[in-house]
Amino acid sequence: MPLYIFNPEHDLCLANGDRNFVPPASALDFARTGRDVMRIIYGDEAHVIVADDYALWRGMNPDVVVDGIVPWGWDLRLKQTLLKQGVDNALLPDDRILANLRALQHRSTVLPLQPHATQAASLDEVRSILKENTRIVAKAPWSGAGRGVRWIDGELSDHDEQWLSRIINTQGSVIVERRLDVVYDFAIEYRVENGNLVQLGYSLFKTQSGVYRYNVLLFDEEIKRTVRMSDEMEQFISRWLEENIAPFYNGVVGVDMLHCSDGTNNVSEINLRHTMGLVAHEFLRQHPDCHGRQFTGKRSEF
Image 1 (spheres, rainbow, N blue to C red):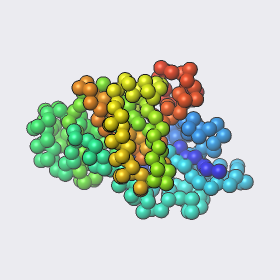
Image 2: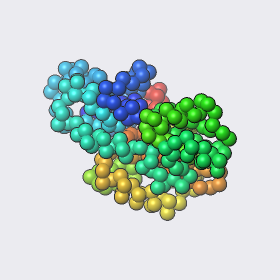
Image 3: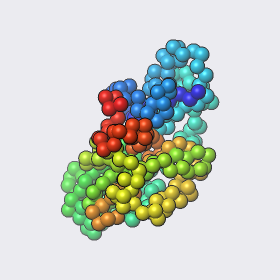
Image 4: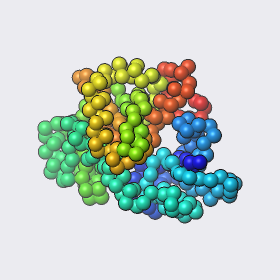
């Protein structure tokens, strides 16, 4: 049977890149209190733990045969933690696979789908972009939990320059996006299995300054109508994923999208991990009577 790991600190670990990185205590506390979201996807009988509790779980379940591990998302820190807890290395991905996965999660990967964005490797490049687009969003190539995003208007402040310099020095570049007038945030959820891409559905969610707040439980076709998502755009994204992601990755994929006031739909980012959008989609499938409600994944909601 598979063992499921809830590690919502994954984005922070991916951004840091160090296998010995220590995430904030708040992130680890949330992992323990929020792990039931994995059971929404995989069933009430699923064995779900946090990585630091594996040895304890194994001691309480000595006869359970674990033939696979399914985390919220894979990163070096998770692998290192599981190894220290006594997990068989044969159940864990090779470091080269994890390095490739991290490279795919670099925001530059999705730039071919983002005509409104570019990569800048210096402050001068950012200033040049800012002259053409006076309102921009600068993003660290790797970031999580709404961190690593900076909203800039008109010109760079001293704090902007310090932030940009730090990101460029530590991660090599920043991604600069022309500010869009966003009406809806939504996502298309997929699964990749042995090179085959399967679309699972849609999710609609609310953010504030780039930070996830909640999902709105609407059915797939309802979301698609709301954001006026065309079949052509949907097929274009699927083909790109089939060519650029599916050959190199197994697991769930979330493509975050922005529906703007001019009627366009724009790719925001791709997540090669589980997402709250997928959790919300599965929750509504199981509980259609909850249609229209806000959903944050808290246990009280299910």
